[in-house]
Length: 135
Image (cartoon, one colour):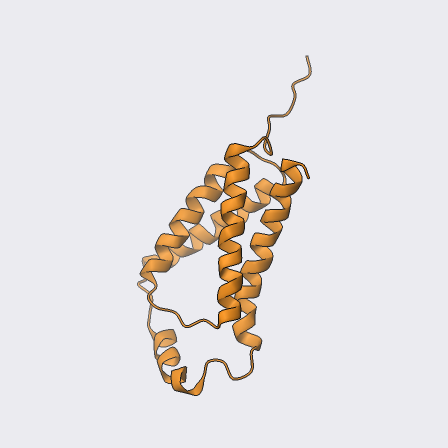
């Protein structure tokens, strides 16, 4: 498999696993368990600081745009993907505790591993090699 194909594969896996991690809790019967329902409802009702909302939206847009750029093999997508990934993990730390089913967490970890592989392929392979210039 070429580095370019691997890059596209891991970007696709990154998005597939990210979407699955969000969908799984919605379709699992009996989630969250009865003992956690009140706590989850209280956490969901908690307001985010208003200053954090535009920041989270900007990070999400940067992540989406950069991953599309990387699928199209645009070199500028690599630093944007890296920075948006680092900022998103920082933002997660500010959002407080979350309750997630094990299967959803498995997909979250898979998405994080895929993101790491995307970054590695961008910076330590020739997946984003410069286009040859015709003389």
